[in-house]
Image (cartoon, rainbow, N blue to C red; front, side, top):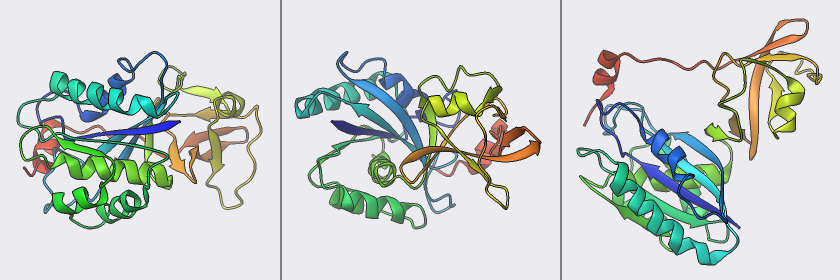
Length: 248
């Protein structure tokens, strides 16, 4: 069965790493019978009205487990993981749900979080029936943690930050290599033509598929007869830019 384990707000502006790494590292400590299949970054409302470290994103780990009995083990491991890796001054939130739970309230809440400022009370209401806990500071991270699960389960938003060996693939691969990994390639050209297996894909050293229709999808545009390039590029922020965005 599938579990969704979400983390938010475990970092600070000058700590040197974000919640994304904490979420990715969680796969290293889960039970051997489980598998962390992917980690999805969800973008929430970016506004001066919303306290955030820099981007107001949260992370959801998608984990395959043998059965329901692993829920409590994942919860205990997740809480310990936060305590071992969060930074003082952050406001960690943690949420765990499974595909067998009623996730419709989490979906509605997650969608709302992408365009509206929400509250902890709303997050708690949406998460009735699943695990939700705060682990420091204001506990505001529970908002993003709930939203991350709802949006990831819904499958129409999010960037895949860890999946299979996407971080080890070279800058230039073939369409076939991506398809072998279950990654769909989408032409953003006007005619949306099919991309042959032998065509080259330039991922600009940052292959991060999007979650679209519940599928891992890489939008690309043609740059030559047999070569395509991903349309999203990782933006590097200076400390001054991050400090400007920091609104806690």
